[in-house]
Length: 137
Image (cartoon, rainbow, N blue to C red):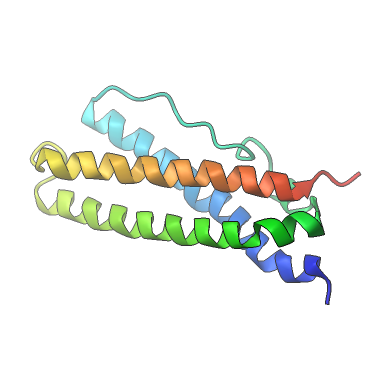
């Protein structure tokens, strides 16, 4: 069985995450900051999100790079899942406290830190995927 066949599920999962959940996290963060009337930080650049999802999925996979990077992709996805779980809990706690205007500052700071962690890990994941794949010619 070829490495490319084995690598496809983890790469598809990683690309799906980037184009679905990372974009959603960026949008939620932007919307929340606008609602809170706080200063909006410049958006974090996540490579590959400026491209079409299908074009990324149609890239050629480098078997050697997959062997080198598969564990890194998997561990990054696990890391992001943990950040997202923490972020969801913090959002629920902030909502239970009456929203951002009434929530304790430490909860708001933790929420911001978790959002930043999700986005930073997403940017790392995009770079890994980009290093594994090349445009098909």
